[in-house]
Length: 430
Image 1 (cartoon, one colour):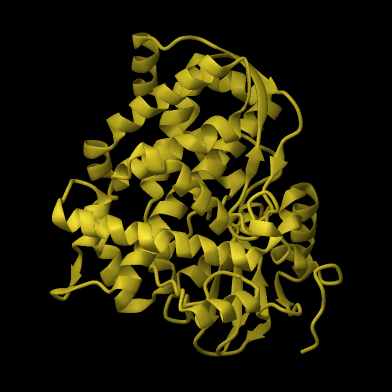
Image 2: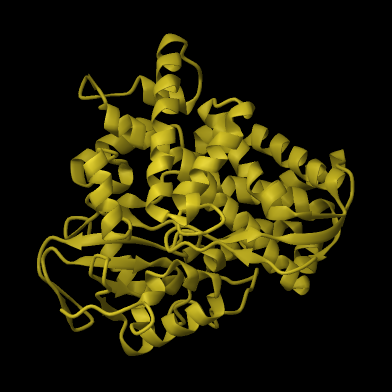
């Protein structure tokens, strides 16, 4: 098949990181594809050819057929050159994202109990409440103007996930830098010397020694944290492999932070732009939890995952051959008007917002979904419960990333009230 460019093929919106910095235009192209060519073949020079799956029902159906559509080691759309250099340097990743079948199930069970809602409520929720209050206090101290994304939105979920890991606060700047390189390697603000591949490889090289040291510490001195679980994990009576353990650390530390941060930042930007929605939540705090579902639908921090067909299959009249890659476009699925009425309208009272596909579905349903939801709900209860006013204080900026991204700069002007016992009680009741 002849190759095209990101400019000549509408499927370039799934490849070109910069396309995600102009979301109105992105959604306009995605809407045309859903209408005219919902299973669109993309073959762009330098990238793996794939079928772009853009309709909600098709993404759902493929996710629910893990035997016919595998993740494999190439589960994320990257330049071919990255995968070639990664293999040459031996910097491989084999996390839950790259696993299938019985192997995936066995590794997921290693931490599954830790991330269950009942355990999170018992071991984590109160500390998340405390951290939410501390970060809103920090916002109040630094106000009345700040870049919310840089000073609050990125740092609150970082502190949550690092506290669960047992990583000390003084190491958080390093962890933030490395995770931003992983998910922001296409963005000039985060890329080392403007080189995406070098940025990704340097990020993985930074993680390796840190997590090796963390493993040694947790084996010598176990604690009640996820790092201890992974450092001492066994499957079928044998310690998990070094590659699998390192990959587990990496995916929990990075994905557990960036996705939630992008939802929080994007959510506040939406509320600033829709003051009527914000006032409704201020007057009806019990509606905040459901509003967080609409925030996650609308922001969709994870833009895609790849699957690979194990057999010939037909989707909407297109023959996908065994071995072909399919790209599951979550933002397109979440804005499919066959599922969500008037999808471009941000509506905190949307009745079916919780049916979003932002966290996937099926066997690869996000391991940390319950923690992410808890963080969003607790943070917005605390913030909205104390807001007198907030508005944008300049232009927002989105990150350039075709994988995980969102608002990276969010200048705001605001007035906040001090925390009170009444505010806490109201947040808990909500």
